[in-house]
Length: 281
Image (cartoon, rainbow, N blue to C red; front, side):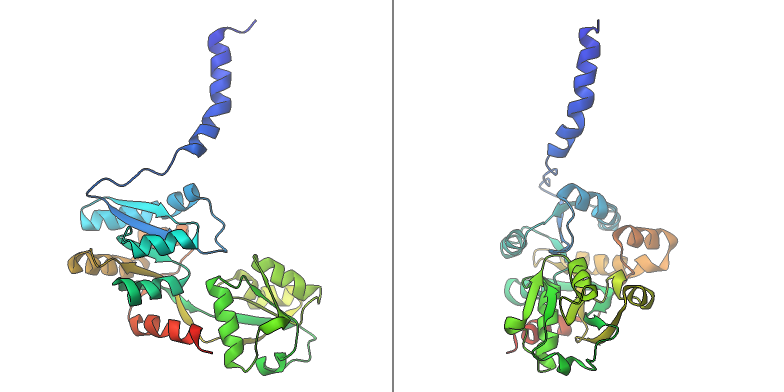
């Protein structure tokens, strides 16, 4: 017969993992800085996964600032929007750059840096497709990322620049692999995916029986912005630290953990122009 203590240990082993998942992300103390992180609709990561993924960066930047930075995972656009509007985030890393661009335009946030390289919508077709340019996609069946996603907006805008309206011929899907599947099954004629996706490498396209038809204009990717509450000296320190990451083995390891290549600066004007380009009719 099992003793009570043995039974209790068994219950503990069962419940502890569940309870661990239920523990909320620690709230920031009064003097802490808050880093809001949003990977957008295609990220798919749970809040705890985002904290684990970006905590090393927050810790690195916190050491440079001689303070503590708390990662605040943002898994919905409304929460990202309200957090920016209410200045709840001292720094924001958001893959959907339209939100960071609006934060700069409407809420006094400042550009810090952005991930390199820029991002484009890559338009793919089956290898044997007769289409030769994006302009040939008029009236064709098109599959694109979710309409409200940053990539979906880039894809729609890129088609518009080529004189093609997404209109009633486009279907929007939540997962980019679905776009690839539809193309391979020839359920659609053209599909749009991110230039950062592994699926658009030459080898991957060859294996999938697809080819590239064209690309949208490159735009900012995963920018970092700072609230107007953050002193300019702290903003500059964070900018310098981000730029240095790709220069050391430790920094490159940190970038690799986040799946990033490095950071660049100098595209603040492009951030402002992004919204006008997306909203152009």
